[in-house]
Image (tube, rainbow, N blue to C red; front, side, top):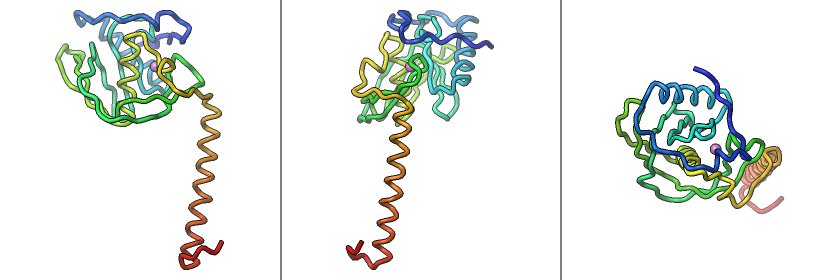
Length: 183
Ligand code: NI
C-alpha cells in the first residue's frame, strides 16, 4: 500500500467527469487500498478517485463504521433533507453548509465485482453524496450556501457550547427556586 497525493481544488482534474470501471484488475485493488490508506492518513471521512488523480468511478468512505468501497456507485434512493457543515480533503481549512438527503441508498460493485447496496443516514448520507459528486466533477463549494474558515466555525461552536451551559445553569436555578420566574 502507498499514500497517494491529494489534488487540491485548483486542479482541473477535480472538475472532470470520471469514467466507469469496466473490469476490476490488480491496479483497481491497489488503488482501493491506497485510497483507504490515504484517507486514514488525512483523518478524512471519504475520498474519491479523481482526488488522487484517477478519473474512475471509485470512492471510499469511512464515517466510523469501517471502510466502504464503492465501484461505479449510483444513487438509487434519497429521502429527507439535512443542512450540515462539510469539508473536503481537496479544500483545506474551510467548511461549507450544504443541503443533503437525510438517508440514501447507493448501488455499487464491491472489489469482487459483485453488486451490493450501501445505505447511509446522517453523516454517512452526507459522505456518500459528497464523494459521488466528485465523480461528476462537482465540489461541495458549488452547492454550499455559506463557507466558513474552520477556526471561525470552531470558535462559534465553543461559544454555542458556553451559551448552552449558561442556559442550563439558569434552568437549574429556576427549578431550584421552585419554578418561579425570580432571577
Ligand atoms: Ni471531497
